[in-house]
Amino acid sequence: MSETVETKSLGEKLLSIPKPVLYLVLILATALPLFFPMALPNEPKDMAVKLNESINALKDGSTVIIQSDWTESTRGESRGQMDILLRMLMRKNIKFAICSAADPQAPEVFRNLVLQLNKERKAKGEREYEKWNDWVELGFYPSGEALGQGIAANIRDAFGGKRDAPPGGQDRPVFESPVLKDIQKVDDLGMYFVVTGTKSIIIAIERFSDRVAMGGMVTGVMGPETSNYFYSGQLKGLSSGLKGVYDMCSLEERDHPGTTMLKREEQYILSLHAAIFLLIIAVVVGNVGVFLTRRSK
Image: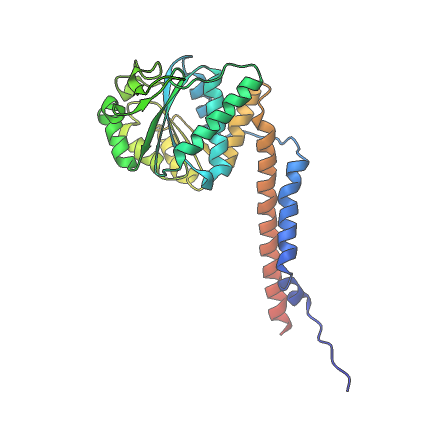
């Protein structure tokens, strides 16, 4: 007896593409832009333009606080945001104090980034940003609500118990440092920045955005919600998602050519859009496959 070979319809073939093939295409689509970068046209969003202008308007030598609430889970967006922010502050000799809420891993992440940037500055023959004299750590706070309320009520009480040390020196109260010695209340800060993938930025805005200029750097997921606070004037600028990082890098490169981050962010943007395009194609192929399969029955 002869066996009948059952042939799949086009719809069934589309629905049975092996997963390893899809993964291989995904890897190639996202990896190729990293090896073959290209310059991309970009029109920065107004919120990123305003953030760039606010940072550049800071007086050289002034002090800001950065609330760094991101960890490796949002590295793709938050790391680039923190990176460009620190580079801009260091270029203007702005002193900064860093605190964290929301995730106990955050302090270690920003310490590593500052260390990396200092190594880069040293290799270029630039002045390293010195602990105590140029920046201090304010520690981790498990409750963003309590932190925000404490800063609004009395910033010296909120951080009064924190200590840091100059190079080779003993721990001393942070308000004895050149960074914070002139800060009596939150109003004395040049700006207050929040880099996060959570709602911790909204908590800070609610507590003291009427007393100090605030800048936000959030993940794409938090962007639509947080942008309301930019349009209301409670945030002086906002970087949202990977596009926000690319906008900030584009603006910094425009004003100060030679920015090393722009090329990297162009690669990331290409990889992201390649992945999104592949997702759209996969959805279209799947729906066409279902339609053809149902039609053939």
